[in-house]
Image (cartoon, rainbow, N blue to C red; front, side, top):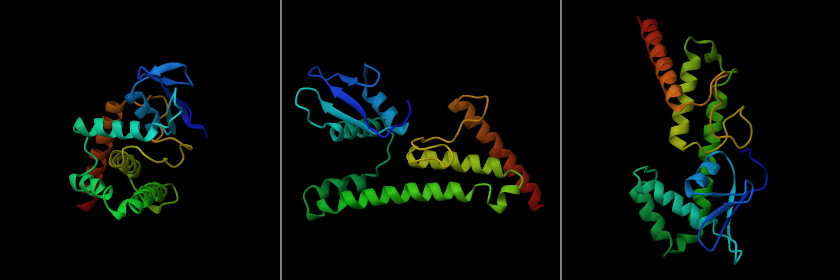
Length: 191
């Protein structure tokens, strides 16, 4: 699904089923999470009332991931968020969180740019393996959010190698092999 300027419109029917207006089929919360990971903006509206339910469903997606043990938000952060709903900080926190995520995305982008071809380290043996490992690490740490340089707007994953799909286990094995090769080369350089 290509990223476009308009958000993907999902309509919630009275039966609580979610309907993708682009593909004319029903979707699940996990499907919606996938659209977002793929770089799409999503808007969920109640068909009857027209109310925007996007925030409610995004919170539900986060709650489901957290309940499955995919913990991203530390307890102290969750506690502080609950506190903000009852304090004057309620007006400052959303802006602060948005700025923090923007800085994280910008930092990720600059890190990837610095590891690009203009970097004098790019001629070092094993540099490509190190770069691939760093990209995988950044993706894991940020949950795939933000754009990867050189892959176009709205994409959240590093480009696939030519001739292969994005088979996660195969990519992970490849990265592990490249990392082991890099470590071996570095240990030989140190002798």
